[in-house]
Amino acid sequence: MAEGDEARQAVREALLNEQSIEKEDLFSFLVALSTTSKKDQKTLLNYILQTSDSLGELVSLPAQKWQDYAQKNSSFLVLLQLLREMGLRCNRAALPHGDLLQEERRLLDYLITQMARESVEQFRIIFLNKKNQLICDEVQGVGTVNHTPVYPREVARRCLELKASSIIMAHNHPSGHTSPSEGDVIVTQNVQTALNVLKIRVIDHYIITRTAQVSFRALGLL
Image (cartoon, rainbow, N blue to C red; front, side):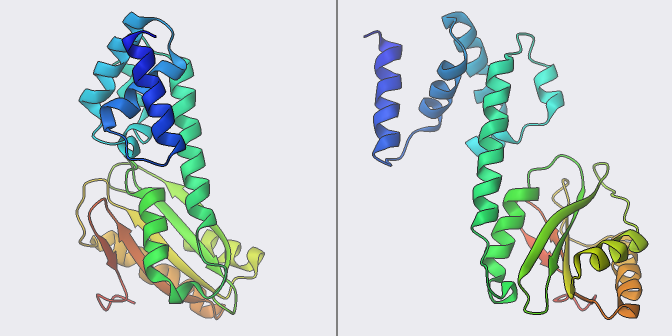
């Protein structure tokens, strides 16, 4: 076997035996799965090593990052999307089926995976029943790098449709700032006011970044 083939075989064996794999070897293996030309493999591998420090960062690269890559490889991009979707689904399946409020750490881990690496703000709501069990988790809005529109009337309407007894709100800060903005506080208060009329509880509102998670309730904002 050629040197490249030997390297790929070593990665295959490591994966099958659940052994740790160096980032460069893993990236090289993914590139080889979707690119046949040795020249294209080298070019693509060099590019992703320059732009990504981990597999999580690689699968979360925004579309505009690939616009800078002259020799786009659609098969590789599809593979990345597949890996991302599989990761998100596995993460969602790991959420507890019982009282979600008893598993805050697992909930935060889930939100980190879903939102922390997004390049624009995303507003997400977790709908719960009377036993604090998950009904569903939905993205209610996607905005810019520092703003997402939120409409309390739409939040209330969706709660009624799902027969939710309570909700947990979350949004990410791509900037990494953990302090709630004035707009964040106003939106939270407006949603809470709208849901109070319906006797639907706002349990918490989290700000999610790559390095920290902030609770509005812990800050005394709920």
